[in-house]
Amino acid sequence: MPAIVAPKKSKSALKRARQTGPRTLKNRSVKTMLKTLTRKVEAAVAEKNADKAGTALKEAVSAITKAGKKGILHRNTASRKVSRLTRLVNSMLPSEAA
Image (cartoon, rainbow, N blue to C red; front, side, top):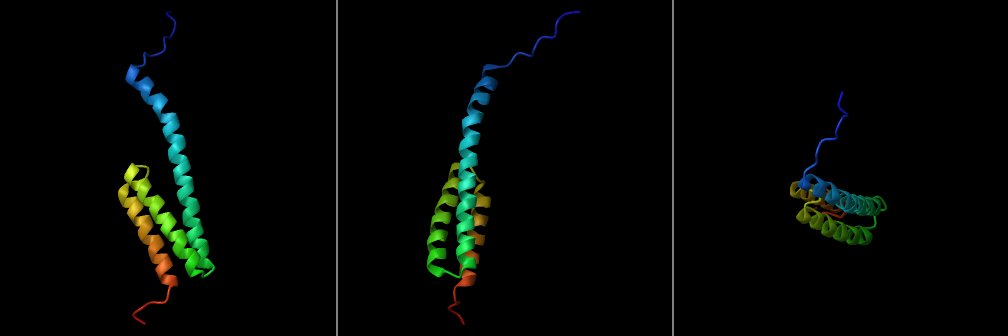
C-alpha cells in the first residue's frame, strides 16, 4: 500500500491563507470597537444625557460608516446600524412638532 500523500496546495491558496489571518484580526478589532461605541450611545440614552448621547452618536456613526466603506460591514448593514442609533438618540430628545 502506498503512503497517503497530502494534497498539493496551489500558490494562490497558500497566499490566501497568509492573508486571512491578519485581515481577520483587523476586522475583529474593528467590529469590537463598533460594538463598544454602540454601547456608549445606548448608555448615554439610558442616562438621559443628551450631550453625551450626541457626542457618542457622532463618533459611532463616523466609525460605522468608515467600516461600511472599507467592506468590514456590508454597506446596508452599516446604514441600518446608523439609522437605528440615530432613531434611538432622537427618541430621547424632545420632538420639535410637539
